[in-house]
Length: 118
Length: 108
Image (cartoon, rainbow over all chains, first blue to last red):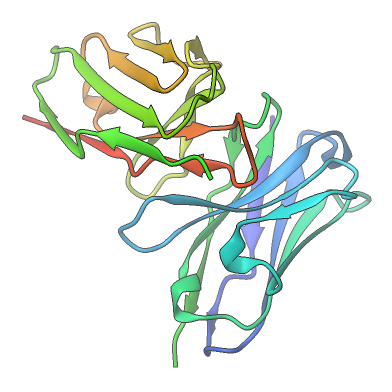
């Protein structure tokens, strides 16, 4: 059974940094592209970043380019999101999701809350 | 960037009735369109991909149609567990992968 477990969400001040983790089980991470998707309070879904299976290709939404970095440790079956220069509008629940069916998000974790506030 | 627009924002339906949700893309996405269901406090769940293929475990009362720029999600007879927010998402031309703003299906 595919399971994704996010962690690392916290309250952080504007300009601060945070690293989110997504521990995967039930499949080999190296075989699949993975994404981070966020949802601000009371808002819709926004794709943030995608990492190819081998991790050699990464993609970002414009609003986080240069501030966020996606990485993975396939030996630990874990995906990461390194977030720098955090802003209030980065406040959201961050989900990791797997792409097993084209580039649909066919399984999601339960999410981790990031709050950026002074 | 392909912009996805969903309508209506809120749909009030009685249990047992049919619900029809719309999604429009700002340019053609062929059949590269997915639908998700989101319930309060839960992660989103894939319902439809390829515009019309039900995901694993999704009941037959859910159906998707359309191609190009116009898409529809139909729930033929709403059950209590179907009241939720539904999002469409295109994966034709990316980055970015883009979602619609969502349609909330509520009990009438």
